[in-house]
Each structure stands twice: as C-alpha cells, then as structure tokens.
Image (cartoon, rainbow, N blue to C red; front, side, top):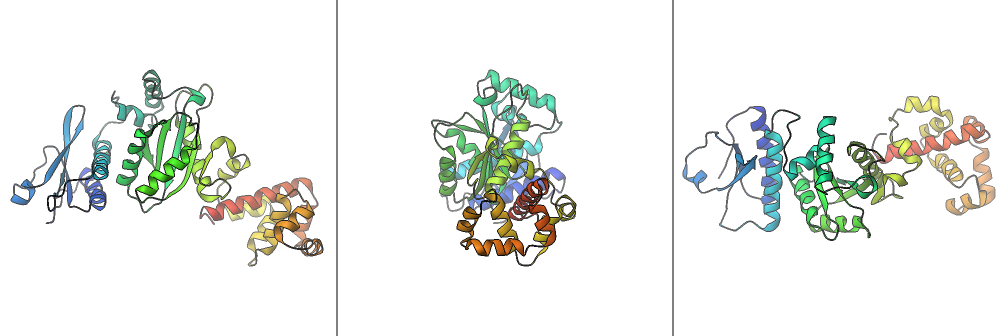
Length: 350
C-alpha cells in the first residue's frame, strides 16, 4: 500500500518529510495530514492507525500509520510517533513569540530566537523548579551521527527525561544537536547517555555541557557553549566523549576562529609553511616540541627519537620556523596556530 500527500504547500512538504522519517523508524507506511485536510475515504485509509497530534487541547493534525499484519507498535516505536508529533507541532505553529504554558513549549522556548520569549520561559521554568539558577542547571548538547533522523534524535532526547536519578529534560533540536537541560550529575552522566544511545543503535559523536553564567536571564549562551564543547569533544581525543565548556581552556578561543588558510599566512607565517608541506613530519616535530614546553627529553620520548635526531630536525626547519622558535611571541603564536590547524582538520574545515 502506498500513502502520499496530494498538496504541495510548505507545511505539507514539511509534514511529508516528517512522515518519511517516521516511516524509516517504524518500517511501516506513514502519512501526516493537517486537521481538516481532505482525506481519501478508501478502504486502505480506513484501516490505518490514526494518532491525533494535540496542541492547546485541539487536534491540529493526524499521524496515520499502516498497522501492517496487525503487529502492535513497540514502546520504542511509540516514542518515535511521539517525537514525530512534537515535530508536527513545531511545524504547524504559526506566529513567532506566542506564549504557551505547557511543559514542552516552555522548555523549547528556553532557546527561542526572541530574547523576551527566552527570558519568560526561563522564569517559568525556574518557578516550576524544572531548572535552577546558574551552577544548579546544566545544559547538555549531544552531537549524534548524521545518519540518524530528526525523529529518532527527538525520540532519544525525550526518552532521557525518564533517566534516574538525574533526568535530562529535552529542550529542542538545533542543527542536528540534541539539547537537554537538567541538574549536575554526581556520576558520569555521559556513560549513561552513551549506553542509551547504543541501545537504540545510535552513535554519539560528542557531548558538551555548560551552566548559565552568574546573573544570566536565559540559557542561550549556555546552550551555545555546550554545543561548542560537543563539537570539540567529537573532534579532539583529549575531550572525547564528553567535556564541560569550563574545561576547554584555549581550545574555546581557537574554536571561534574561522578556517582561513590565507589569514593563517599573516598570523603565523611559520605555521603556514609547515601546513603547506606535503610531508607533515616537520609539523609534528615542532608541535610536539612546543607541546612539552621545548623540553627536549620529553619531546624525544613522545617522538621516539634520539636527542641528536631531534636537534638535527629542528636545525633543518625552514627559516621562518627557526625564526619563530627563537622569538617568544612568534613561538607562542606558532603553537596556537598549529593547534588551530589541528582543530580545523579534525572538524573537516581544512
């Protein structure tokens, strides 16, 4: 049996995409229609399982699922339907800045584009004790493999609200990143998240966390910092699989730099020379040497070379590199620039 929408407006196209994602999760035919939309009165449609999508107490759409051979939906499949319902509500809500008092809306409005909406949602969440101020609240960003659909990401995020002893409430999906809000965890919540994802056949690339700054009136900045931390956790082995924004140090500064090799030539000509070489052995030697604070013994141990070999390599460096190694500011800039290149390469920007 084939089910398809017949209208082509923007909402219908978005609903059709949600239906396709839900089909992939359920391995069953799915169609989503807005409430009031004309539906074919044929025998096939009459046999479909109809799930109303409620908003403000009224049905705004219906998710129609082929029951197949009569096999009932499993708990995880119902979670996928619930996630699709949330996506439908987001798609069909018109008029930015509208205020709703239900839990799902308040949590999503924590990261609304309008500052006034974010601040109001934060105040409401505080009154409901869903979040606490400053360090009492942790925003977590989960970067998931791009092969996972939005429906499955949201289903995963909403499922995490049932974790005990520390629930992680689903806020929204931003750029493929699942954003959660909750309390600090005594144990390693990252292990729990990884286990839950693995149980669903998902691969988490990185997890980042951050708390709102003192005096913050919303969670926007904390969510942005958590997302940056998640991207660095995915890119850099020393932060994988999870890192808090407060632990990033200089990497936070580097993460804000745009990938521009031409700018690199101006910032650190020595780093640009090393980056431009086909053989990266010289770059590895210099980077390791600077990582250990120019400690020759430590560098030799990491590189597995004799001290004489290291001195020989350093002596044969390009003139720009040797000049930078002999100058304090240029040496520090070279070190940062090499780390910046490493970050760009790890995140696919070079």
